[in-house]
Image (cartoon, rainbow, N blue to C red):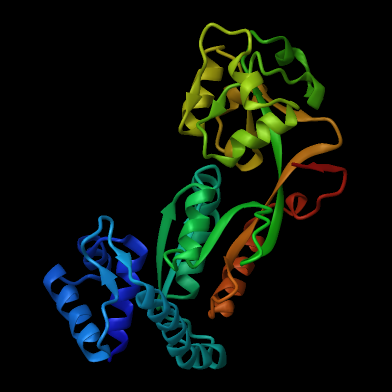
Length: 311
């Protein structure tokens, strides 16, 4: 029995497909299949029911997989001890980050983080909150950068900063004439949203005291849903409505468009941004290092939630 064999069976359990598991394990499918078969022969049991698609573990396979994950985590402790003592971090850190944070936060800290820890390999995936949670549960994601809270008892949360929301308003919209807006000024009749699965969608509806059903039944000729903030911004600039944007998403707007940004009167609506990781994740020193680098580059006014409405 080898650690590689345990890694392979966990990979198959994660992806429920031998070919995909082999691809993510950087081996050929015949090699992965052969090694798993050898392990099954050594243990005298069948770990996976290959007759089903997707592949599923057998009853005994479930128990073996649970123990395999424990063994793999424990095998990391030796390296962790060395890293904690020397401060020289190595290995791989798999980061999941939601799309409404990634383009605006990553450029602020990524370069300095990589330069500080040159032996650490980063694997960064821009995915939704739901995908991050699933990834953490399957060890496909080590740490998520996302909006909190998750309210998941198996996941540890570490708050970093409180990001204000701003309204982005077309020049023909009545709100454009205001210097600042109130939460009550927002209407679902004008609201443009990201597609379902993005937490910013839920934040916007909550701030408007509205529901998915009410938004879909609002008085409009065109119901816009977008997968990216950039698309929504362009629609607003064409006077198709208004939208809610996170603070960091408007830092790079040119001077002509800054007049379309409307800050909120107090209490300012904000979302809490933080890190999420499994209780079983061993490399807490990497989490702390990542948190330190992020909080270094965040504007100081985002570190406090005073006079805020957290949504």
